[in-house]
Amino acid sequence: MASKISSQLKDIVKSKTFSEMLENIPWVYIEFLAFFPLWLFVLTPLLQLIHVFINPYAHSVAYATKTSAAFICAATIGMVGVLLYILKHVHTYGKPSLKSVIKENIPMVFFLFVILMIIISTLINGFTRAALYGDIYRQESFFEFIGYFAVYFLSATIISDKRLKAVLFYTLISASIPVAIVTILDSRFFRIPALDECAGASGVFHQFNHYAYYLIIVILISSVLFVKEKKPWARVLCMASFLINNVMLVINNTFGCYLACFIALVFAAAIISITEKKFNIMSVVMIVIFIAISGIMSIWEHTIFSNLFTFAGDVGNVIENPENADKAGTGRWTLWTHTMGYITEKPIFGFGVDGIKERLALETHNVNDRPHNEFLEYAVFFGIPAAVAYICGVFSVYLNGLKNRMKLDLYEVAALAAAFAYLVSSVFGNTMYYTAPFLFIMLGLGSHRAVS
Image (cartoon, rainbow, N blue to C red):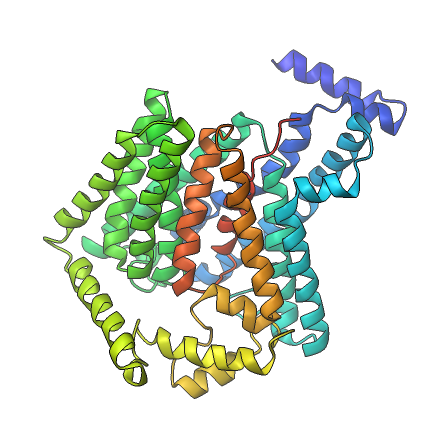
């Protein structure tokens, strides 16, 4: 293996022309350039855990630094990989027609429109500090929003090598386990000074809701891979991750993510059965285990049933007494209704990145300054056309998956299920610099394309 790699590298170095170099570069090398920064990103929670044990007093800054480094790496190395992929594809198969490019990259066409609207919205609303740098907490500039689509999603779409996908997924799963164990010990057994800056059961994240977004991604990947993997060691690792992170999800007490996780597990069972053309009993067993963990944990944690009753009550209040529903969903209803009002004021180009920040917090008498609904967030920041294009782009990923359902590998199925979980939870949440990239990486990995 080492001699083969050495020989390939020598051929690349000895190439006399750029065309010859493109011929000598194996496809997997190009995919590795896209893979590497994404791998660094999925490692960041574990790297952050190690860092806070070394230096507990640099929590927020440390995490932002790591993700910024991963973003810069993705935007440079990853984009070099994408560029080489395009050039090698053209060199190997000839220049494609515009029609074929659009047909094969429908999600990215929609996302390019989103990027265009982000740029136009920023030009119209001005290059504010929030637009250029993001606020100190969320760290989302307009560059970051563009990067979700143009860097994380696009880089992930060109990774077709199953070995690279496996490394990415098992790194994500493996990194989640020590984070969950330490957080469980800290929140229920004894205080760990390294996590003193964390609020509630939030692990290494700034807020417990953010940790829940990460948890549901890991839980869905662990579930699907356990069902579809053949290797015993991989199944043991996936089940360990599934159990530990489910326990953590109950302790975390983010009901929107808990609900999203359950819905996504049902969705995963459906798509596994569809791709296998037969009912998969083990995928249903994973749902039963999820429910069983919730039931057992309810002996100590009284969050699940109380949240269910509260949720049912909130739904009833919204239906019967909408004028008194402002506190539904821990205040989300009033955030949503105010945000929808703002959208009608600037429906085409929105208010720009965090353009409603102070106004929303002031008018809703709420500590939250974002809508707590990512679809509304895109609409109020960048306009309704951008939000519609975002939804269409996401939908087209799943439509492509349905069209190629018999060709999907286990990693593509896992990625689609994990992204679905995030998307359901995003109805109740906000984008964050260290959680939103997981969605776009999963969407990209789930975007099946023919292997070159």
